[in-house]
Image (cartoon, rainbow, N blue to C red; front, side, top):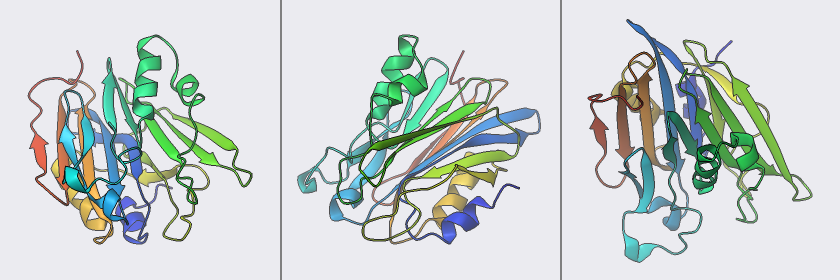
Length: 246
């Protein structure tokens, strides 16, 4: 039975970075749903905003003069490879995109990557791929007790009203405890990107939330509506004027 997404987030003070992929119903058909957020405890992590790119978003510093280490905090979380949408929590976005554009697979791309080198947390790399038909894949690359990389891949056909949640952490701690188990099935009723983004933003811990991206794509027309919320700086919304794919 799918769980309540906002309740899951409201009861977790620090899920870290998170991905939701799934499908919801529209009066005229179905829509794919994408959500991605970042959280932060350090000044370096909190000094970020989401900004537009041609096909998605990237993280940028709110105040460039305060960036201590850009290596794991500045990247492109959402990008397109043809009609496929990639969403990740790091620079593996570029790895996945490069592999897909030359005809290779999501899984092959991530087998070349490992978890983040941020001891003692060794944060997992989480990644998702949304297909044109609303099916999707999720993956997590995390550290074993012996610091070997464990790679797990999950594939979903897409079902109206259902999505899957994957986060970097199970909650707060020192070190932070990595996500465990399979992506969590969650109920989705989000035909309106702005309303859905508002519910998610309200559910994320107010001290730790930094930025949130939500996109809803009509699977019939390809028209997409995108909404971004930034703790620091302006958020924005885009009306579905043109199809995200042809």
